[in-house]
Length: 302
Image (cartoon, rainbow, N blue to C red; front, side, top):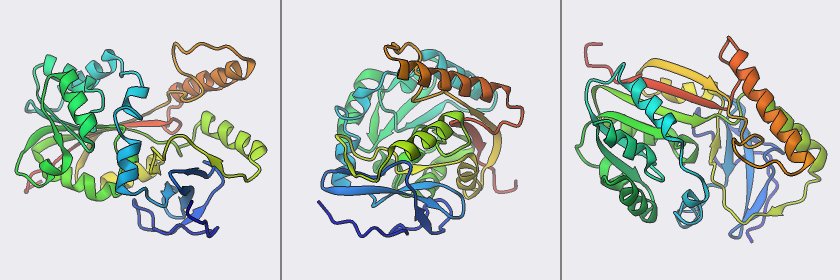
C-alpha cells in the first residue's frame, strides 16, 4: 500500500475553480487497490475532491459493468419521460447524445420518443451492455470529442462527479453541440445543504476514530459539489442557462421500496423522508442533493 504523508493540502488544486483544497474528516479516508484515498475541501467553491486521482487502470476497475453499473437499478422510466418531455419545450432538433449512458435506459426511452439517439461511455464493457440494452450505438467518448459530429441535445446524468477534469470534458461536449443545442446536466450535489448530509456528518464525527478502513470498492465520486460549484462549472462554458432546479432524494438514508428491518434503518429512512419534505417546502431552491439544469449554446451574434 502506498504510504500516506498525512498532508493537510491535496496534491492537486480544485478541478472546478483552481483553488487549494484542505483535508476533511468526512467523507472518511479509505484504502483500496493499494492506495489510501482522502477527501479535501476546496477553500474557494467548497467542492470536495478525492485525492489522489485513481489511475486509468483503477478507474477502469471502478466503472466496469460488473462492479458498478450492474449494482444499481435502472432509473424509473417515468423520470426519463419527464426529462424528455421537458426538452420538448426547448429543443429544436432530435439528434441526441447520452454521455455516461450506463444501463441505456435513457437512450431506450429517447429512441422510443423519436430521437436519433447515440450513447458514449468510457469503458468498453459498459458501452457494449448499454448498446445491447438500448438498441442504439454506444461509442467511446474519446472517439466523439475528436470528431465532427454535432448534436441538438447532449444529456449527462450522474456524470460530472466522476470526471477527473470536469471543466475540460464539458468544454469538449459543448463543442459537439449545434447552435441552439441543449446541454442537460442531472447531477448529485452531495456537499449542498441537506438534512441527510448534516446527519451523516454528525454521525461520522461521533463514530469515526481516525482509523483507515479498507473498502471493497474504489472511489466512485471524484468530486462532490455544491449548487454553487456546479454553477461555476456552467458559467465557464459560455452557455445560456434556461432551467435549473434543486431536489432531494433522501439517498442513501431513504430508498423507495427498500425494506426497513432495523431501528437504525427506520431512523435513517425518517431522516431521508424529512429531507425530501424540507426540500419541497424550500421556496429559495437551496436545500437538496441533486441539481437539474438545461443550458443552451448561443449563436455567434447572441
